[in-house]
Amino acid sequence: MANSGGGVIVFGVRESQKAATERIDVGEFDEAYERSLRSAAITAISPPVFGLNVYRLGDVGNRAVVVEVPASLDGPHLIYKNDYFGAPVRNDSDTVWMKESQIEAMYRARFDERRHATEALDSLYGEAAAGRDSDKRAWLIAVAHPRIPRFRDRLTREEARGVLTRTVGLALTYAGRGGIHPLESVDRDNPRPGLRRWIAVNTATGEHSIWKEAWISIHHDGSVTVAGAVGGHRMSSDGYFDGWQVKSAAIECAIADLMALTRATAETTDNDEYDLRLGIEWTGEQPLTILTKDTMGLTYDGVSVPLHRYTPVDVTVNASEPATDFFWHVHDFAQDCVNQGGISNVLLIQPPAREE
Image 1: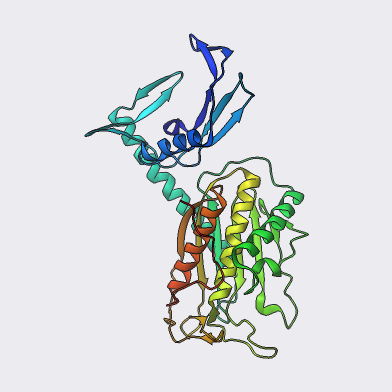
Image 2: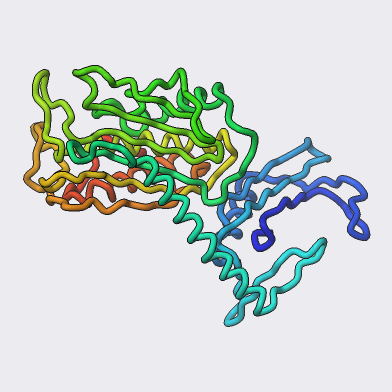
């Protein structure tokens, strides 16, 4: 199924000559059985097939199970047996083995799709970074694009507003209020229409709040963008950091907002796997410096590595995976982003321990 663009498998149907004839009971299908089914899709297939949706239907005596296999960019998926491998593909009601030319074509399609996904991410990032005053203060640009967009009806204003509302709760779960969240500097109740997207416009417009300017967009195909000023933040009632100084807590909060926005948008648009990119745009003369806190809670730059260019950090996540697993992806992404500036540990994002 994964080699054929995805599909649906229904357990609990008797068939004759390719036609369904009646329902039959599949027996007990408990959590351990479901876990084994998912494990087989990961351990017995290469590359693994992630993102199976498993549904249990009916009551005792009339139970059925439906497995939804997602489309995949990673084909061909292979099955190994000792020293041999094959690539099965669905053909009507039969399973056949791909010929060498078919495998070659599928590998070519995989590389083409990856190139297209990279180009889509480049376009999103460039668009979100355009027009920022990065010569005066550093800007954080973070974008996410579904690997296989599931196009559907355009998002309504109410749906976009609902996504933003759910995002706030998730973001605060990930990072708390120990830093400046871009989400709190935009109009979440009144998203405005843009080109195939909804835009949460900046509300930090006053003389004393422009330092935390931010913009957020939710695209109809499930893509999201976050752009926020992270350089030159306020450090006291009348004092500000320089434009090239960025607090690591501000990076963590922006990542929490991006990841929460991605998860909430994926739920609404029925997407799952996402490619994400985060970068910091700064074109001033001074090297970019990421600041942390010492044991006394004071701003500290003793371990910072001056950056003449911040290299964008890319990651791929499954936005529909279990909550704890996703929380750890938020943490690991944030750690990669602050590590680049010489900072060892994240300050705010502390996920719960993983269960065995």
